[in-house]
Length: 298
Image (spheres, rainbow, N blue to C red):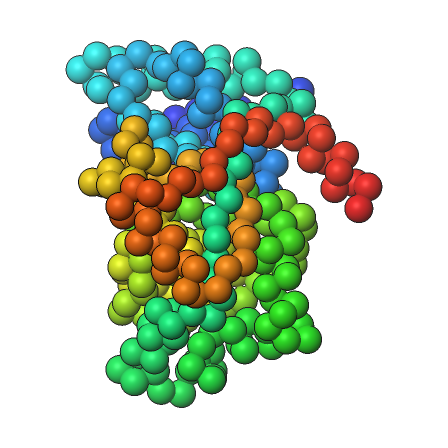
């Protein structure tokens, strides 16, 4: 028995979409083919915005993935087919991908590279899980990331991280953890831990494959760590940035990292908790056409 409810071919610059049953109160909309193509994510974020303005009957919530949206609905209010029909209406209403302008924000985060907390995580891993792991050389993961990418040293890695805006495609794995992809076309990529770490400090920043993530809570993890930043999740709302939403970063945001030393970062982290730190967040709509033109001129 197939989980596929309906499939619509690519048309008018909009990707193909497949609707799948995902339990008794969920529908999964998948866009395009199973490949890493940020244009599919741009379209998914556009549909997500359309659903916020015009939700389907029985709508409860929606969560984006890299090229998908999971929609939760109340089956006591609307049946599945009515939800899918409405999703297709919103899909058809979207302009072609290259003409999208997406609401979003620019979030600036300080980062301390090769900090003591991520080094502690690497040390714990090397002493309790895998002593011969090639990515723990020198007590950090940085030498491994540098080697895997053929870079001249840590400085080139840091320049690559600082030199681009990072597109927040979606959040998941842990509460508010953003999956970030470079908008500059950076080719950084690295294998993940094997086996995984048992502990990663909150605020750690790492890379797995081409994707950068910020860990919102202490948790297991497998991305190669290269630094630490500010808290990005606070259910208690201790800083005003989290009063309306416990998650700092949303799908469709862009993140820019700025380098600081570890003492300055630790001071800023304390200020976040006593609400004397102001996060740098600004509204910044994202034009796919402008982005494509910019990439084409590089």
